[in-house]
Every structure is written in structure tokens, then in C-alpha cells.
Amino acid sequence: MHYEKHFSKLEKIRWRLEEDIDWDHIQPELIKHDQKSLLRNICMTEIGALFAAEAFLRDFYDDIDFSCFVSVWYYEEMKHFLVLKRYLSHLGISIGEGELQHLRMSIPESSQETILMVHFLSEHRLAAWYHGISDWLEEPVGKNIFKRIAEDELRHGQAYFDFIQKDLKQQPEHLIKYLKTALFMLSPKAPADIHAVTLTKTTERLENPDYILYIEGTVVSDAVKQATCKRIYALLSILAGTTLDSYASLSNFIKSLKKTNRLASSIAV
Ligand SMILES: [Fe+2]
Ligand SMILES: [Fe+2]
Image 1 (spheres, protein in one colour):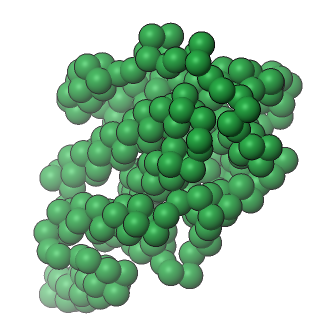
Image 2: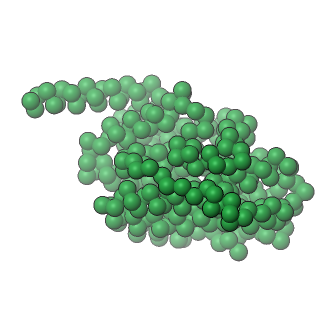
Image 3: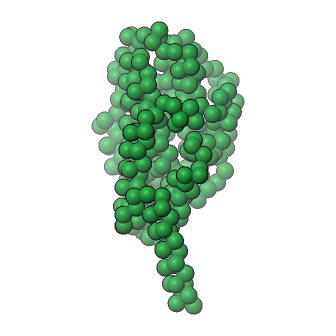
């Protein structure tokens, strides 16, 4: 089971909330007012893992391996919420249970291929955003927290990738569904904040639902964005079994797959 492999891997490198964060040395004076508001929004968005976990367990009812893995993923995502909530409390910012309850929602059903690809790409984008925030912050404890959670998100992206590969080994015909979702997410015409949390409208009930646009537009460097994009296309190439190094090459490959499928079904008739 992939669950077993990822459980062991994540267990070994797991950071501890009490031991690994230097809570006694936070320097609140180094955090600017606009940074506080952004951190608060990020913290509240992390609780969206609760709604996603519910949807995963429903939509992957027939996949025992992935359903087990959700327990590890959900634990780590809720720890992101908790570490940020505690960090904010050191800055004099609180988040009440009522506010969190107000965010409660149910995510509509979706296909397993769409969910896995959306989350594979979203974890990569989130890792880039958090790396960017780590560089952007001057406060050292905050920098360390965002570096740690960025690395977690990247490992989550790798886990989703492994589950996609597992599915493709069993059902190679699913490739086109995965790649079409990637095409939708990576389109140059897609909103700059496209991500699982904006697609599911998790962020819409926040005071400032557009905060991700600010991160994407102002906080993250072009170098980080380009490195993330390169990594995503390298992994999509592994799935496709051919080099996909740009949006155009992904689009052309999907067109060729559709053509092959049409040909195959006309021969079958
Ligand atoms: Fe997270
Ligand atoms: Fe994650």
C-alpha cells in the first residue's frame, strides 16, 4: 500500500510543534500589519483540509489505500492550521471557533482523476507560495514555520503523484483525464489564484478572498514560480511517457491522444 510507504516516510521527517518551533524567540515587531492579515487568511484557509478530507473519504470510497493515506495528509494539514494559529496568537491575533465554523462547507462530488490532479498541482503551487512567504518575512520564527510547511506541501504533492502513477499502472486509459485536468489548471488564461481552495470556493467566506492573488503577484519570485513550473512539467512527462515541457506541448499531446482514441474506437466498430 502507498499508505504504508508514505506513513513511514512522513513519520521519519515529521517536525514537532513543541520541539521544532522556537516559540520563545518570536519577534512580533518584525511583522508588518499587511503581513499579519495575510497570515491570518492563510491560517484559516488551512482548515479547508477538513472539508477536503470529508470529500476524499466520500469520493474514494472504493480506494482503501488512498482513504488510509488521507489520515496522514489530514493530520499534517491540520497541524499547519494549528502552528499558524499559535504563531498568530504570539502576534496578538486570535481566531475564534465561530469564525472557523462559518467557513464550514461541503465540497461537491468530483471524479478521482480530477481530484488527484487538482491536488497534485495545488500542493506544488502552495509549496511555491509558502517558500515565497518564508523569503518575504523578516521574522525568523515565521520564516522557519513557512519553510517547514512548504516542504510538507511538496511531499504531499509527491504522494498525490504516486497515487496517480498507481492508478495509471492499473488503468492507463485514465491518462487523458489527468492531463485534461492539468491543461485546465495550467492554462495561461486560468485565474492567477487557481488552486483547490479557490476551485472549491473555500476562500470565498474569508474577509479578503483575494489574498492569494497578492501572494502570487507580489510575494513569490519569478525564479520560484519557474522552478515549480519546471518540476510540474517534468512530473507530467513521467506520467505521459514523453517530454512535456510547456503548455503547448501538453495541449498537442492531448490532441494526439484524442486522435489515437478516436482511431481505436472506429477500428473497434
Ligand atoms: Fe497545508
Ligand atoms: Fe498539503
